[in-house]
Length: 159
Image 1 (cartoon, rainbow, N blue to C red):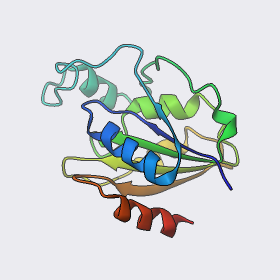
Image 2: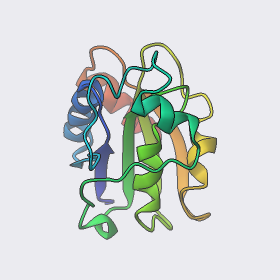
Image 3: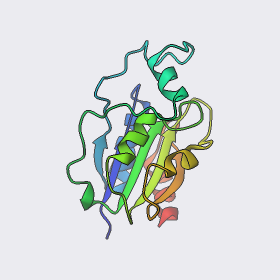
């Protein structure tokens, strides 16, 4: 039986809620990807081109620092990685997270929350942040009210 981790970045709490429910249903450990410098509401104002999130997302090389690493990443075979969709892709802190570990031979399953957009080019954007032997796949948008049965059905389909 594989050991699973749900790692997530959440700016407003929506993705955190989805991650907690997913970790319960998947019987997985939970790890929050926290930025070294937390985001303020002004930082997240996507309508302001000078806001921190706007600047980071317009620079493909941006890699916001993470506050702490998961100390036992080698223990996991399957890692669910969750985030809010920003500009049709994952926030660049997800690239930072993926580039911080050796995921060779591991399976990464993405999940996201979004105000209305889909995964877009998220998978293509993240593949360069992991080794070629890492399986990275688009998972599911976990918007709205989540129920355990719905998530269990999705997890069963993944196996």
